[in-house]
Image 1 (cartoon, rainbow, N blue to C red):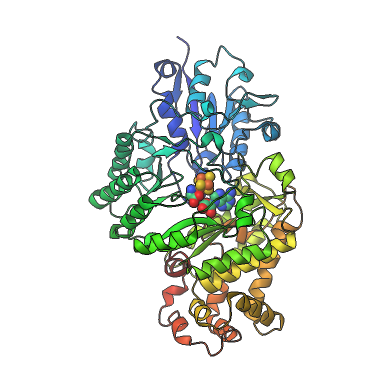
Image 2: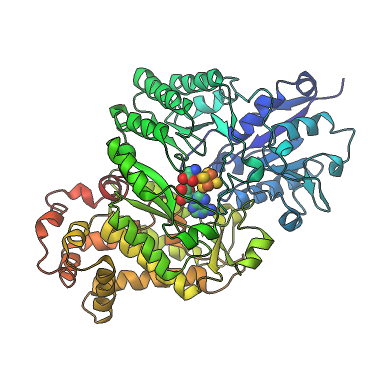
Length: 608
Ligand SMILES: C[S@@+](CC[C@H](N)C(=O)[O-])C[C@H]1O[C@@H](n2cnc3c(N)ncnc32)[C@H](O)[C@@H]1O
Ligand code: SF4
């Protein structure tokens, strides 16, 4: 009998939180249901974390398979290089959302990894991987269906490519993560899917598209067993990975199930989800009601469900049209929220193609008008396998990209900010350290993530984008953190007049603290977006990197909050005779914990 081949698969999680390697767990769960595969191959315990992967001895591994996304692409490339050095005849397979599905980019992607990657699987790969293993000795690499490689592209993102397997993978209850969970004492996040796909086709998102439009449901009993398993194991965090929780009637039962399991077995388990339903209807509001009534979700993310966070992206019709996004009318949304006793928060994207400075301001003004509890703003990330990241779209919208290397220390630093005694002052000091460290010449892929951002397009210039970011910062500090929210609403000036006055006063030298922070923002913006577009720059991007998470303004907000008396003094330039009482509740003596970034997040920025 020939020796079984060893397969090592890995999904390396984000820097600041360990996740079980769910995507490769699905591949293993699916393939292990095939007897022939079990006879010929042996699946090793999967890789899940940077530190574990860095020190791994690959000498016994025949096949290495890694899933790729923004945060781990460079890291995976380096791991694969090390693997090939240790194991020149070993095979490296790539999968995950970062693998391009179209010819436009697949060859470029493979060329960049010529020495280290043998074959890649775009799209969901349970079936592709199963077929690949079954035919590994009878076919040449380029003959496998739904694969790409240097010099071949056997993939078209058809319905067939996106079809889910007949029986859905059940990695948790198969015991695939058992040892990892034990090793980490349950201190891990676990993703659960109850369906795949999204019926919409927003141009910036890799979730929806024509081929992924059909929402494919998992067996509900299997999903419930998975939820029970995660609660039994007392895992730290459960994340519902569906694109539109609350879109389907059965989502209400699903969320109820998680809440029951939490309550009965592990009240401290954090429960979050990847996305709430776009254009929410009745079920979505029921879901949020359940969550906000669940006191046992009281932990460090406790306030997340005080409001319903709805994906808006932009309020401006021209911007929405340019990215094929069609929202429910806000007035309807507000009526529905009111009738269910929900408060609304929103998600917005800065710098979408089609955006203009005034249109972005219109969006912020609408947020103010609709009294959103919190407007969470992400800068647009250009993701592979989205309509935006296609040659045709980029040409039509004259998109110029910037490829940035973001030091992972920033992610680690933002993690620290969640710790109870981490102060704003320390945040600023740490930031300086990160900056110094990464301005050096030695480039180590292990310490960076790569992101792709739009720096200009037909509708906005680089200068316009800077203004868009400045407006976002102003809304963030004044409105989101509630520094000036009361005064903004009671002022006789319009929202626009308030912004203009803020800019003018800064220019007149009357608001030196705000001016310093605003200048710093411009500096960071130009440092990251402005200089070069190539992808080999070592750049410091605190606001950009951190803003992938809801704390994009933290370092800057810290500067304001640490100089609160001066900030209020300066705000007096805009708002006459401001009442200090509201803001003084953040006074260091009265509640010093609010000076910790963590507390600031909990009580203000993240209080959504
Ligand atoms: C899972 S998604 C959306 C949930 C829901 N399906 C919807 O569309 O409202 C969560 C949020 O991620 C943000 N997002 C999605 N794609 C993005 C991209 N390419 N760059 C930046 N932010 C993005 C959007 O603000 C979106 O509301
Ligand atoms: S943004 Fe939301 S609705 Fe749009 S494609 Fe992505 S997941 Fe679907």
